[in-house]
Image 1 (cartoon, rainbow, N blue to C red):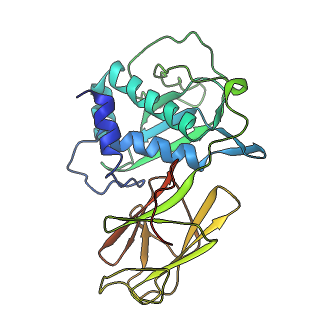
Image 2 (cartoon, one colour; image 1 turned 90 degrees about the vertical axis):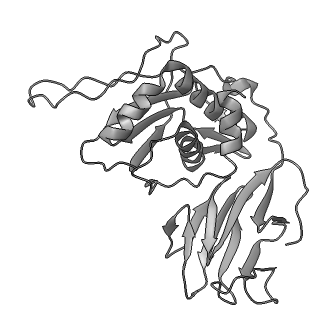
Length: 270
């Protein structure tokens, strides 16, 4: 089984946040690939009805330990990560203004497991010089400009004018305890009470725990309804209305709920 297959399998179960929480474990390509996909979703720019421009240039800041791990992956692995990120843009019908590009930088004040990803939209040349990630050198005096980090090679993605003008309709679903529930209403409430839209059999879940709502046609948010034990999105406790994206994991009590955008309408009730 190839690296790309492993990535696609891993995306089904990885929870990504800006602090991985496993400082003793080595950074895995699948973790970073999922984070890149999520950052692409967060950074989309609406440009017309039904069309969004996605970031294609990503700067990944890592601790010194994780940077050395990423550096050891080599060119082929990072190429696959860029390829999966580009394919995500195509699957979501995002427009991408150029090639997907990944840069790694080392932050000495970051702890192992901590990462920061910044995505932006940049025009890129089709002639790319391949290279491995290079650690940021020790800061020079203010009078000397700091050198830029070396970019990773990136695959081509379809130009804007080749992206279909009418995007494929996506079905929003929630995966709860092995069941899929289609989000066919503007607002859906989950909780322990049988009167909620999606009952959750978990003693750690409040009777009415969270509400998932649509914002426009393609944006979704989750809110905690004053629950006893709180609500977590991708490992972070929320205190206000929080956006969720394809692959986001919502945790209430001991129950993990995965938010998905799929092309087929094979969800359950909601």
